[in-house]
Length: 132
Image (tube, rainbow, N blue to C red):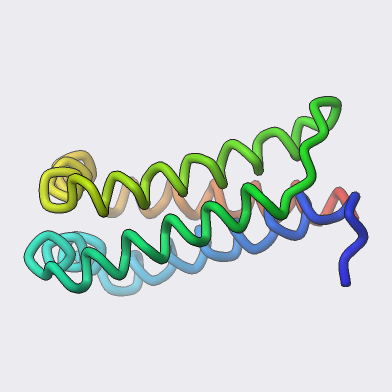
């Protein structure tokens, strides 16, 4: 089991791996993010499942991460967890409209968002590794 002082770093590492993996997936198969969001918009069951998983993961991150106002990484990870929980709520409550907004936000520039996601992923992985 991880030491409580390392929990924020571990969560950051896994979020970074997720972000980098999603970026590589989109860059290898352009348009997959747009197709995924369209699928979420059109499928009630998939939208509900996505909302409940996002809310649950966000709540788990928020509740497991130790709150330490003196540790900037702890604060950021708690904010990420809370934001994920709110995003899951928004998907459940406003499903189609929320995902349509997300789809229009991404627009046709999936490559740009994927590169940004990859940079963020590498940065988060580096921050996490520097904390161990």
